[in-house]
Length: 335
Picture 1 (cartoon, rainbow, N blue to C red):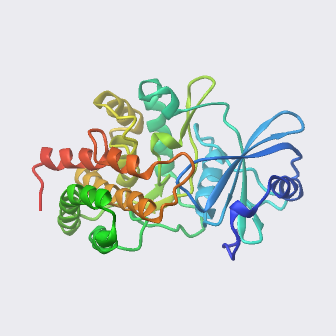
Picture 2: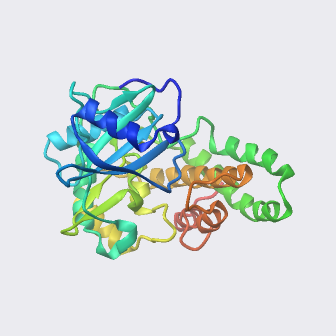
């Protein structure tokens, strides 16, 4: 897959996308429509229907998603349940290059997002089996963009330092909110440093990279499918396990029974480091809060997203910041 060289997915009109799908994939689409929403400003997701009435999911993105597409394709070839494979181009690739914009086509899973039906309706055992199959997959022979939990090239502490500077000139309401949130995030940054210092060696495996319930679709039979492998990586398994078992969706808390059923499907034979899950939770919580605050400061947010409400949710009762704090308390950990 070619790396992006310029342009924006938001500059593409439906006609251009439809023509490119026909030219590169040999699929004739009758309808191609963008789907609004989401945090990823570098991508547009489209719904499409071909001349035969079959539904397809289409993504245009300037991110390097080649590794994740190869992971999904390999899992599908291996017969793993609950994974959607990308459609190959006419010349056998997992995506097409539109002047530096990657074009990806996948079958549309006819069903509802897990966030729409609730955590109690998820077949957690199957979700655990699928996750284990992802982790047991030999990494594809293309480079992974990430090799750890971080999505930023800076430490959690450095991110907070930057926010301190940026928020010097913030309005009174946001400045007051930051004064409330800052000590809690600083505690997580200190705990992350301590846990990282004391960590032990571990294996790196193939990851989905972002397997929260927002990236799970339940089909017409109620069976779960992982979608969106854009963040796929090679890193400790606890990166994925943290995102499933702690969760990042404050609107859909994960309970002890959900976790038990997921681990039952995942398999008790896998060595899981609970301290590493907590450390990765510290990193993700700080990065998510930093992203929300940056969106507030820029005054430009994805369609349908209120970044201030998202920040409040992150530090609320079921938010990741609070969940990680509880784990630190439970384990008697602090800096």
